[in-house]
Amino acid sequence: MLPAMADHPVLFLPGPTEVDDELRQVLAMPVVGHREARFVAVAQDVCRRLGWLYQTRQHAAFETCPATALMEAAIRNFVPAGARSLHLVNGAFSLRWHEVAVACGRAAEALNVPLGEAPAPALLRQRLQRGPAVAAVTITHNETATGVLSPLPELAATVHELAPDALVLVDCVSSVGGAEVRFDDWRLDFAFAGTQKCLALPPGLGTYAVSQRALDRAAGVPDRGFLFDLPHAVADTTAGKTLATPCVPLVFALQRQLQRIEAEGLPARWTRHRALRDQTLAWAAARGMRPFVGDAAARSPTVSCIDANGQSVAELARRATAAGFVIDRGYGELRDRAFRIGHMGDHTAARLQALLAAL
Ligand SMILES: Cc1ncc(COP(=O)(O)O)c(C=O)c1O
Image (cartoon, rainbow, N blue to C red; front, side, top):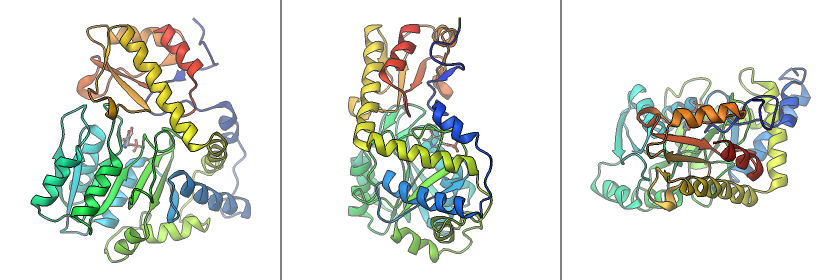
């Protein structure tokens, strides 16, 4: 059968996500030299717009890298050797940040939460009261592996109350641009994402926001590395002068996409994502399937993880493929038990309905 809506399989993956035609045309542009005035102006504009996306008046920039590189950058810049970092772990990606810190030789401590649950502020409170002191706490806003949204404002407030010197480092990879993120209001110190999730662009750029307090802290940390020396990287990139050669077409496409997101409006975009989740979960419920995440407040607006309840996930995936769509069969130990539909980026209710009808 021919694809339902496009000339290619349409991605309902939890990343990478579907890229609109208009953006694909920008990506096909002739390459511009990254020291040309035209690129410098676009890079500066992209940094300003990223500040708006993350809702910060502090600093925002990008680098040509996968999002994981920014986990590593955060550890090397904000956790001095010998200091302790605390990692809230409730799935594969939150676990990765702990693994990165261990690989960087830091005294990394994991605070584990069962799969499918969000870390509770009360659990963090107990740990911070108990000690020992930590230099930073890492939080995964949206655990993509299981479709869990963490109560980020409450978790950040808990850190500020009980460990005022600890930096709040946040993985917003599958939330920013799809779920509410308010960097300044929630007093975050570092937040990052790739382009391949709610920004609905191909993978290749890491975007981030960083507080002045975090940059001041980093300036005193030795051995921060070279490309990801954040105090320098932020100054250079916001001036439009990336240290190394960036993925030029993707920077132009990010500018266009940030303009499009501005036209839609952030609150409208957050509302659309919640509506796509509700549409997905209503479809699942009507067929006897339950969300993998028990707590309704923790169900991600950008990716739904659905317990197949004995139905064949392979068959669902086959039907999706036959109709011109791609869904995910479940991450890690959940494969073929709890499948994921990524409804993030620029998807519409009509396109989601076409997928659900095919399933
Ligand atoms: C929450 C989260 N963090 C980090 C990553 C890693 O991103 P990347 O593959 O761009 O390094 C992903 C990728 O799916 C993710 O979902």
